[in-house]
Image 1 (spheres, one colour):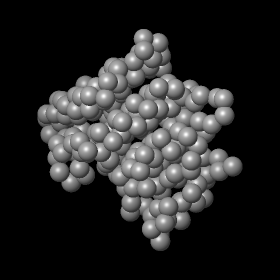
Image 2: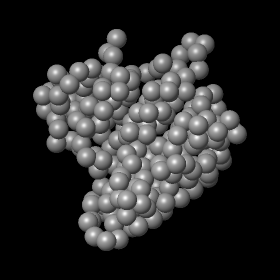
Image 3: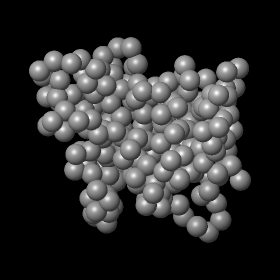
Image 4: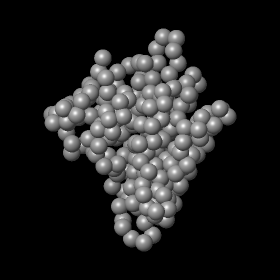
Length: 229
């Protein structure tokens, strides 16, 4: 990955669990986002990069409250979080362009890229209240030739002993996984199942220790989901 003469294209999912505080509504982890932005700047100098971010304690918090204003509040919260994410990226002089999840398509992504900008897509909610998953968007982009990185607040997929699994290539391995380790998108098993069912390869890791740079340089970090060879 990322070695030799081939330049890879990357889709990086910024999990809500890593860019927001899990248990504090509307808490943005500025220090973590600054670290991510610095790494994105470096990998974007030689590769196409698409960013997707989740809702964390913004969108998922609002979506969890079932009342008549749920849809409106959730939409507003995601726009607020997207503004914060973009502000940090822009501070690193990264040319970003927001694509709300409701308007996502590969044509939209390619249009932004062809104009020299990095698409920043976010999980969204439709007017009828249906949630659009950032994970699903990331997987669809990966199915179009992009290598996928899912950033979370944990080092990778953990087994019951708290050790990071190097690779998961089948749902048969689910009994080995500590399913209590989850992010605000609903659980690691759901994420892994979607990746496997889509037939793509992805890496689940934490962005610390310059892990984004390490992954795109071909260094094994976190857990690989898909083919293990």
